[in-house]
Length: 231
Image (tube, rainbow, N blue to C red):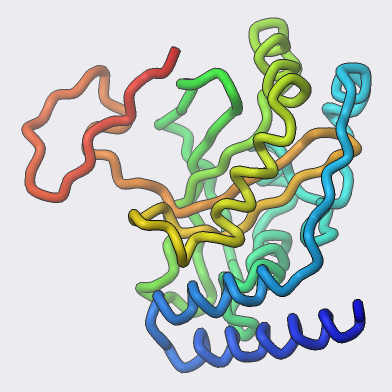
């Protein structure tokens, strides 16, 4: 039964790559990717304790979904680099197998510190074969680091609210094509129940005033206001 499921996933992966290779529509690629993901065996979460989070927050571990070790902060993404992003996007079916990420640049001017459930940061990528359907400006959501200022928020989100982060990843991974409203394009997401670390990578929302000290401009049609600070 498991072998049959793997064969179905591989067949759907080939179908997805064919759509990406011929420049099919974003909608058809999204639907094919979600079909592939929904064919995979379900991901089972094993609850983590506060002690596990405190002991393993800095530990690298394979993800539950794709089996790759993954970065869980800005510095690690820079260390893992373009080679890892290529493998990750290929595993998630969001990048054609003949294409790759050539460079990764962290955003140094705009920092995001709003919210109390996770850390966030922005970065840009360069693809070997540019494609208008591939976003170069990306957003990453990761757990708070275990600092004096954010330790209580980290324990709250990783222990008291678990598996909230897995649910968010799965919403994009499995249901992106079925959402009744437009959501940022999914590129990769994974989580470890050994460490509670995770990463979710999506397209960046082009907020009109992001990085500004307050909202300063009059919005034009279809411009996006925000982001606002959260409590």
